[in-house]
Image (cartoon, rainbow, N blue to C red; front, side, top):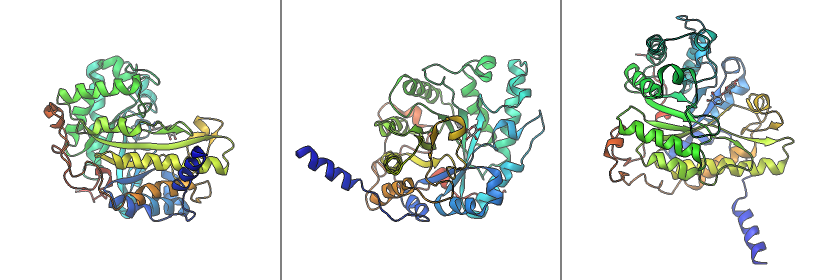
Length: 384
Ligand code: XIL
């Protein structure tokens, strides 16, 4: 009986609004000083009005889903193609959206000349520097946040991934890449972006150890991206705690590639449960003092990478294939709405953990005293 009452109460508390909050999220997100982003593809961004409307009405920043990756930016050695990245950055500027830069060093989506080349350390460093200078240099002042290192750890374990950079340069490739990026754009916020670190475990701990070491050595690292590719029913309970560990080190954190994939078929019940999962993720960001942005990985279920990469899963995003808002959109709005009048925890308190002075020298200060615009939230400004 008692349990039944509890269940009913919990269900009521968790009930989602019927009204779809299309157009309401940007102001809500800004009221908390966080950005709400979406991964975009170049073609529909140029041509598809429905796609453009979803982006401009519901989000405050964009991430290029593919076009800033190495295989597109430098398909042949010393041949750069800026058409896609320029299109994304120009779209963002026209619509007052921020841009998260994604990504510099990754083991996937490398052009064959790079991945199949035989490199000495000196040559590979030269290649890294040219690419980094070109990409960060071109968008200096317009892209203020970069995923410099993407997925450095093996898929399901606590070891560094055996990628090209690691093989040729050794484990210090991460520090080298961050230093190069900092030289290319001293004003950019530099991130390590990873998956499988959203809940406690050996991989989460390995990243934390790696990051602590980088900070202790004064390497310019400013943020951690929690990719957040979740399976419906398994969003980790301790996401907030995992993100807070980095916030406590003086780093920004971002949920950088959020989606929640549902095993087919996805019925109404699953979509409503998924909405609670989206809400929980946005709430986690609000609960972490230095969480600056939540970005969903795609504009609609029609554009999501999930059906291709995870056959048998579907419906991972807040808009369906016809650009109709799903309960997940209401879930995100509800998290932002509910906290609007409250003080964001930790925002008024300097968070300088004792003994962490060295680490905090990488942050913008000893803590965040006032709400501030998130870095990826700053509208793109015209080139100098
Ligand atoms: C994915 C894109 O969504 C796909 O279109 C592409 O085919 C493969 O890459 N982690 C990342 C992203 O950092 O860049 C990946 O994006 C998804 C996993």
